[in-house]
Length: 380
Image 1 (cartoon, rainbow, N blue to C red):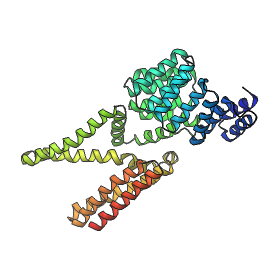
Image 2: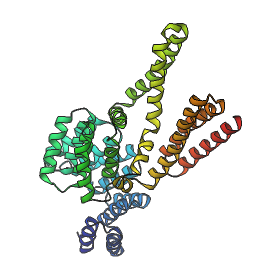
Image 3: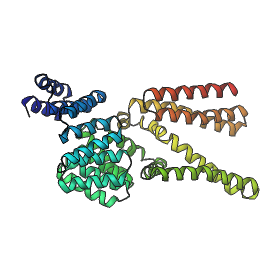
């Protein structure tokens, strides 16, 4: 490793990506086919969120050093950032094949498996890394995350305890401890770990989003919704579809029962109303309760600009629908009732819009929502 590599890695550890990039490029200027130089530069660019450039440098590293496991590891990291998970997994497996004794490579494989929602594969890969290095922090954290998703919370707690004992100042470990506590329903203790994680690393998104969920969990209604979201997140894709279809077809069956047996309507109608309210809340509860955080000094700081925009738009629509519903009950106004339906139904395309990542998909969803709003308004 030359002096440019050493200076660049030191700067990279300090988060000074621009200066680190300069050092790596300076080293490559004198040795353009140096695989480690391209690999280190790829890691630097990846951390700076310049994923296209990071992948290009990683591919160049593999070209220059096809038999170096680290180059394939870096390529897997860049591919993971690009969400090309099948290719990232192949690169990680190649790195493991070339160097089966480095615990960092099973850690990457575990991280990719977590993104693919393959909890068992993630646990297996993390355990493989820990067999090589019992103190490997990434493997400890990923093992704990996989155990939480598999419902083995006591084992996850023990694993995170080991990780915190190894390094009590690791932000990612504190954030994972917070999420594990959220899964256990302890939002107060979770908040403390998320705060500690952000104290150590103010830019850790995993901790910031955890703080937002912990603050919203102060409200019992949102705690119920959060418990449902976390439970659904632990299920396989097939199980999630079973739950969704069960709710949809269950409502249809209850509707038919109520029509066929009017005497049962007083029992069935409240269930239908509650189930509709539950479905509605699965779509709007997160941005709606984000609105409450805007009146909290700490909550305001935790929300992103996009979350504030979503909470404002969906909150306005929700309260207009609720207000018109009250007006229709008090006055019997058909116009107020239609307005309530209009704004109530508009919540769904708005929620879909803000669930899309900023970019092309967001603009398409926004255009469709705007079109539906115009068509609905003209038809009233």
